Length: 234
Image (cartoon, rainbow, N blue to C red; front, side, top):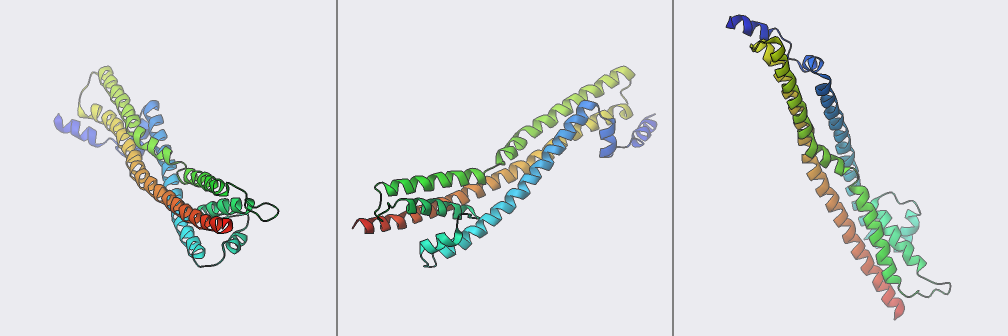
């Protein structure tokens, strides 16, 4: 008898596609939701990795040009009104305010340093927000996906027990399919959550380091402009 039960259980298709097809509509919906969430999370991960790599490269290139000794006005004119990188946009914000701080006679308008600092702070805040864009989605997927998967598992097990009650049969061929289909949902939830958490921590750290690099540049740039203001006042 036991041999017949094991044989019957062995004939059941336990592939992922087969278990998905046999599952209830609720379990299927949970699995589809988790797969879509995971796919979108990976799209964000790839996009942010490429964006941060490009930002580091562009920042290094601009810093080389900034510290090359060429006049800041010439660098500003070369960049123009269409800065391509975050650090260039911070530079343009500060330099633009610097140029607007002179009146028609060429004299420096009082309060120029404070206005330049505020312009730099606003530009940095804007770029920091852009760098951290969509990272909250990864945090949400990482924290919620296991619970969504657990909900699907509980629902699947509940359905499996209902099937056992209807058939009045507790052999392996009756119990195994429903339990397996339910547990797959937990596995899918973990597969969605683990990469999201790992890359959220990495990308959040990268964004913070890039923001810190912008702040450091803004501080150095502000010091240079402050020297120019002091020389003009003298």
